[in-house]
Length: 340
Ligand code: NAD
Image (cartoon, rainbow, N blue to C red; front, side, top):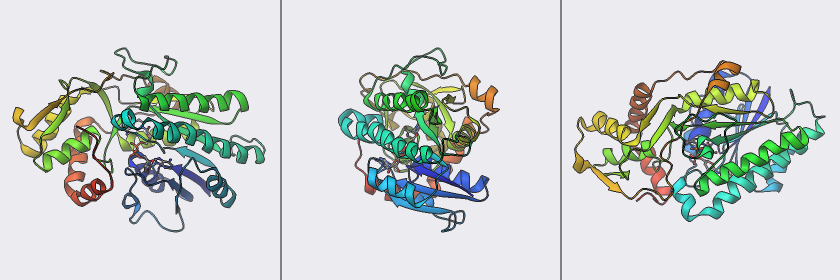
């Protein structure tokens, strides 16, 4: 039985990943380490798939060296997947310190403890500890040409700077110690369990509540949207079959501008789009107009491809939020709003 330590597993992608793993692998044990910030929600991890024999939760900060060491002493961990992060760009503009602490210091702390466990287990990096760090396409900054894994990093906001800085540390643990790491850089995810401050769940929430939809600037920012389960299948492949030390982009390579997405949500729920349903707000400073990444490497080397097209994925996501109004209300009680 293999043991997976998942950090940030009570958040959006982490909780979907835990469910994906328990659905698709037999005989695995998942340890979820999450600090439960406003974005973490243990309700994301209830139900038939999860039980005491395959899952254990620790409420713990990845910066807490003693507690992380204790978890590694208590369990023989085979894989670490580091989702834990402060993840919202707007919050990073006003609360940069927390982003540095969790996204950089926390990642290095976790990696140090994992590396020690790996060294004790004789450096066998096929069956020893493997470390997968979850990063983002935002580290490339705004680009219209598709960025490959070799493109320079050019982050423009405190969130993406902290993610880029963490990546340099992760990569250097392979270069300096041959500690078997991988990094994934995925595009924007959407799907169930996403805290309603990010574009898609926020717009669904506001539409459901008859509130105006806040659109940054002219809404022409282009994003590549990936359904969260497709990202989970890519992460699963990289973790088990990725070349140690390598970075993999994950995306659909189809882009839509924000206003297109907003209009689709309004049309699905309200059956119409009227300008008085929209509230244009000033765009972020140093806003990235377009994220665009090339996924040839993961497609050709690992045989991955996304399976959910945007129309279907968005409909499924809207349905989930319509069916889970209580989840939204409960989540919002836990966190202060930051979007204008
Ligand atoms: P999220 O904000 O929904 O969840 C983050 C989780 O991390 C929460 O459960 C939170 O409680 C936990 N956490 C925060 N600080 C912690 C700490 N110090 N110790 C332990 N746990 C802590 O984020 P998400 O959207 O699920 O993103 C997960 C990862 O994927 C992040 O690393 C993010 O940078 C990356 N990513 C996200 C997207 C996206 O579109 N959401 C795209 C690309 C990459």
